[in-house]
Amino acid sequence: MGIAVRILLIDPPYNRLIGFKSEWFSLGLAYLASFVAEKGFNEICVYNAEHADDTKYKSIVKYAKDIGDYKKAINSNLHPVWEEIRKVITSFRPDLVGLSVLTVKVPSAMRIANICKEINPRIKVVCGGCHPTINPEEILSSADVDFVVRGEGEQTFYELLLSLKAHKVNYRDIDGLSFKEGRTVIHNKNRLFIQDLDDIPLPARERLLHVETYSPDQLSMVMSSRGCPYSCGYCDSKSIWRRKVRFRSIQNVIDEIVVLREKYGIRNITFMDDSFTLDSKRVEKLCLALIEQNINITWSCLTRVDMVSDKIISLMKKAGCTKVDVGIESGNERILRLIDKKITLEQVRAAVQILRRHGMFWSGFFMFGFPTETENEVLDTLSFMKELKPDWANISIFSPYQGTKLYDLAKEKGMLSDPVDYTLYSHQNPHRFTDTMQKEQFSRLATYILKEVHKYNRSPRSLINRMFSRKYHRNPRLFLSDIKKVIEWLRK
Image (tube, rainbow, N blue to C red; front, side, top):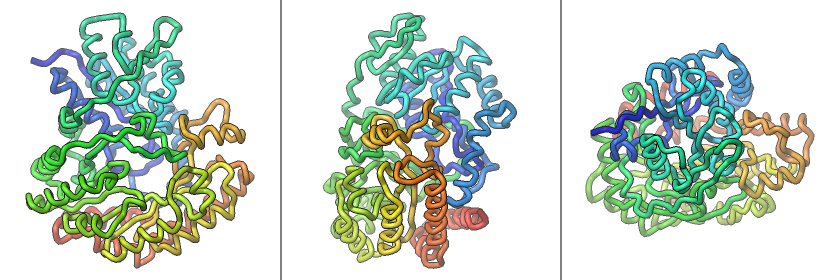
């Protein structure tokens, strides 16, 4: 029998507010939904407010130009997305709303929290994710937010629901929870991690509002592990996972893939692990299981250049891997040391040779705009990208996340506004967080870099390589979806 607490979990909009199509739903919210639903809280829905039919794929150049639309939407009472959110909340009549809060989505999440209280002041508003975990005091300074779930959220959220259901007013025994008692913010002790990830039910995609409107690609994310042992100076992942890595069992991962294939017709999986090949022996076992059980899917993953080997790439390709994303970030040795990437340019070159030798489609992730980075060092990254000739290039502009080394450096250099404007915290926002260039100089440089990367990706070589990597003969529907994306992307 279900426990009568109505729960609406919301992923606040960001990309949608600048007209950009968002491919993904929040896996974190889907895991929360499955965890508490299994324990009896069945009246639960996941509302992905990023998901909409009227958004388009845009080039990074167009994206950067339109990025100011986010702040305009935040400051507008008439934006149609807020009206949609208001209608969803009013229709669902939740007792509790949970918000997943990335740094750039803080303004959007606070707007939704305010809408909740306007509709019904008795709605409990709970925030979770990296930003609330790092700075719960800031989030709870809003009169519209009641609780912050810090770190891994499933068990903490479930215990909070039990307390609310029992009408308890003392929440001090719930590990991982921050809340207000009068004007005082209380931070309970950190919660221990769930030891066996197999104990968590598969993410509840079926709880997504209007799940029937999602394409197979938009439902294809799989997390086979949680956490990353590295401490890159720009990444706030450690705020949630504390540099500890836990893995799901191979069969548990296979079970999810089978469900995705049979229930949603998904034939192409995107593994979202921070560093998929961290444990090479485990990857070998997963690949062999995919082959031996004749799962017949294609898939992609993200990894580091120092975790690429002939043996693992060869086996991954045999098991259906068609794309490997690798984090490179910079083409300058000083910057690589500054950001604690723990790789060298020679290691990058060696990994690229291995990927190319096995005919593996690979995309490189690059970033610029770090504190102390000069214009010449930024141009080193562009030159290195062109030297490597990735099949696809991804470029980001640095944003300083709280709790990271580079946030502290940016603050030391006087590069942070007071109060902080979180609408600027996007990886395609040409906002300056480096102290070596004036605002206009950095803006011109950022525009040039974005245009060069877009021009590179538009080349026939990049488009043809990407087309062949997608294995359309195994998944014809993917071809039609990709054609639509490319047409929209080229127009923008």
